[in-house]
Image (cartoon, rainbow, N blue to C red; front, side, top):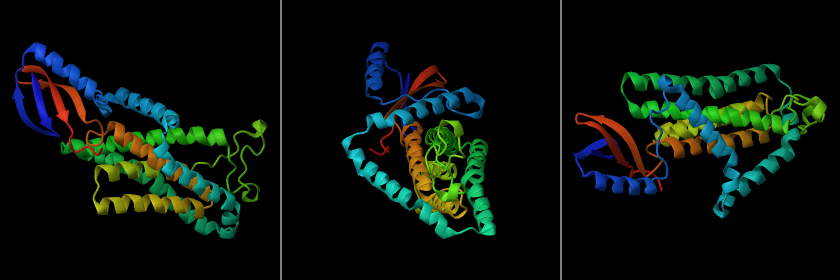
Length: 289
């Protein structure tokens, strides 16, 4: 038996001959860009969550190999902005001066907004969605947590690969591998973990709930955290540029590959029906193309 769905609303249920079903499923599988895992990532299926994060991380790391000519429209400006920021990094930090009280306040602000608040919001949304049987809210919580996990892994890898000296060291010179292999790692600061984390979270939430108010809140939070990391003298401007951009891209990758609304056009999954086991076909015509 096949159950047709228009997004999340059942339209009709019908019995079909086995031979037709086989041909139909073969065509649907060929047309589908991806088939979601069953069961989905939930606290009761943490192994699925780990697999999702590992699969997405592999896709994110290898994505530069799949870059196309249109990607240059954002890659070139990103590279230029990073280069300009690196050039003025030392001057920017020195111009800020040293103000311990101010730095402490902005450190607290950026840590609360960049780490505690996103993770807390994801956890609260997960439990609220579960209690209220709001699958969309639960999915948003899971996707935002997966995006932040992917961002954190990528951040650590890049930090130790670049080993860029933080702005509080060596008069804010910001050198790469300043002491060579013997001094590795040397308090690496690029990219900014807080910026990367909060931008990945913001992109997922804004993608799932695209209202102007929601986007203003989450992107406003992400921007505040990014600026605060520099004012707190925890990161150079270029650290924040790289972290924010990569975080936003990671969030978009997870959103595109895992969200039922923003993911594949055709999805198949096994369902239980009063007549026994069946297959559910979702035609996601609202998915952005």
